[in-house]
Length: 204
Ligand SMILES: Cc1cc2nc3c(=O)[nH]c(=O)nc-3n(C[C@H](O)[C@H](O)[C@H](O)COP(=O)(O)O)c2cc1C
Image (tube, rainbow, N blue to C red; front, top):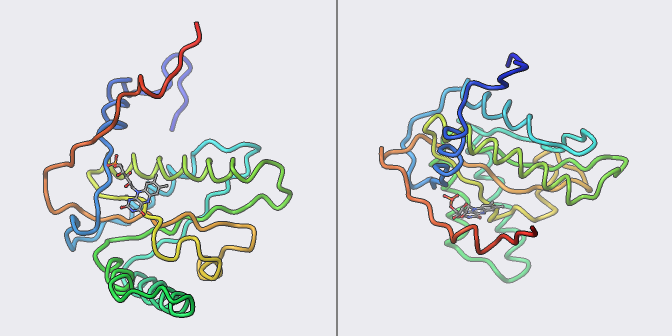
């Protein structure tokens, strides 16, 4: 994007507010079987890469699954769940099937990783925060294209045994999965928030 001294961008504050407030999570049951164009996925990833980052550690790491890749993810996560939960005595058939079937309802799934700065120059929390900012960029870009998406942290997200599959090391973290699909319905879900005034203190 070209930098302009007097006018940085051609978008109005109103358009930014509309995008931010209109952003919604749409779940796989709401996706059609259409595949999102690769250029849109690449734009989503490029915009993720422009998130703020303390000491420029750029900690976000992504693994994009689509087509046969979704089947590989589905197989990996359902089998890992089965293996670990059987050992722990927490296995549920319903959860196994969910992990095996849900990826196949998506056009793409982007695994969200946080790569810890090898020198640990900043607190880990800040690298998780930067990665979350990258995810918000993905959300907003997807919504701008009318693409359905949501960040999910269920299943194997916090299992250390899952990390190698996503090329994540011991000090890295898997932060969940960004699910994407073309919505079936034209109708966009309504948002729901408590007033911001309840969460703000002013000091004047
Ligand atoms: C860190 C994070 C983890 C989330 N994990 C899940 C999840 O595991 N399952 C789920 O249904 N939604 C998950 N969500 C999405 C929220 O449910 C969703 O953002 C919330 O319902 C508000 O809806 P909105 O995004 O449309 O405003 C997650 C969101 C965030 C920020």
